[in-house]
Structures are given as structure tokens and as C-alpha cells.
Amino acid sequence: MATEVVDVLVTGGKATAGPPLGPAVGPLGINIMNVVKEINEKTKDYAGMSVPVKVIVNTDDRSFEIEVGIPPTSALIKTELGLDKGSTEPKAIVAGNLSMEQAVKIAKMKKDSMLSFTLKNATKEVIGTCVSTGINVEGMSPRDAQKAIDAGEFDEYFNE
Image (cartoon, rainbow, N blue to C red; front, top):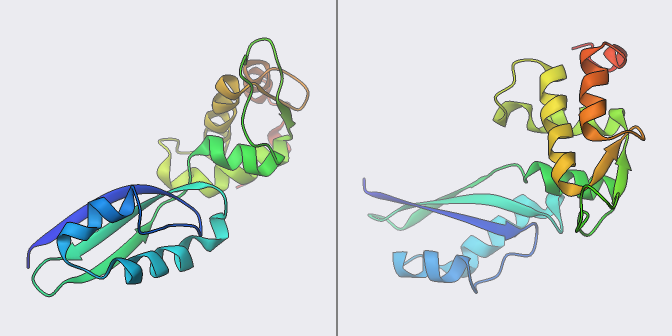
């Protein structure tokens, strides 16, 4: 059984037969519209977000399987805050304010794909993403929020 794997980043629920999907999957000889339909069905919960998708094609019988990943942390943060984009000047302009509860929620969603062993450290990773997007956490800079987590100020959120 020969397989080909195609990795693409699509907008949740809005995949099309055009680029990047069509040119990557088309040459493999499978029905692109069936692939698009299945991807859209599986990614509808991530509407508007960029979602990593793997299309695994069995080139012998031209069957395919779709694996949907979790959107990037920055996309989850922006969606949680209702933002279209982060700050263009992260150190000078604040794009939004993430609550610790929201940060923990995102960390729980991403925990399996993170390197952290604990929810506390996974949350610190999420907060680290806030640095580059210009988003504060609980009204403080992301780095200060990470220090506050280390100091135990938010321990009530990390009862795993």
C-alpha cells in the first residue's frame, strides 16, 4: 500500500478546490470535491481559523483519510478575544487582554501538542504567544503574567 501525505493549512469550514489544496491533492488522482467536502465537515468548528490538515492518500485504491490538527495558538487566542489580528507593534500597542481563565482554556485545547507536562507550564506557553501578538494577560504584560504564575498568584486555575 503506497501512501502520499499532503499537509495543508486551510481556513476552517471553507476549504476550496483551489490553492493550496487543489494543486497538492489533484495530481494524486482522487476526487478533490470529496476531499474538500470532508475537510469542511471536519473543520467547521474552527470556522475562520487556519487549521492544519493532513490528507493521507492510498495511491493504490485512491482512497483518502483526513486528519485535522488544532489551529495555531495565536489563532485560538485571537478567536477567544474576537480579534482579526494581533498588534502591529506588540511592545507599544496592546491589541487585547486575555483572562487567565481564557489562557487556561486554550492551554487545555493545545496541551497534547505542546511540550509541557503540566497545565501550568502549558498555560505559560500560551501566554508566551501573547508577547508576539501584543496581548496582555489579566491587565499585565505577558512576561509579568508568567512571573505571577511562577509566584503562585494564579494557582487556583491549575487544579488538574
